[in-house]
Length: 78
Image 1 (cartoon, rainbow, N blue to C red):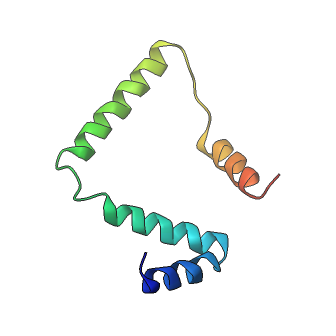
Image 2: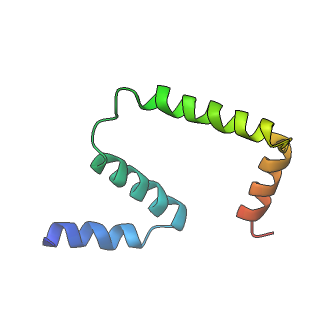
């Protein structure tokens, strides 16, 4: 690792966790390469398939407001 990279790393590690997570996300995205041309259509088809599987299994799911509230509570540590 170069001295410049080590200096940047040290500065990043001194940041709050939320800032570090954002930086890591951006760095990883920069390494991921160009997006696949058919990625969105493929993912939407997969989501449709999963919804149909859940319906056939009789699953009713959970209302988004309940899921969101639970996730926010978990993130707050409660």
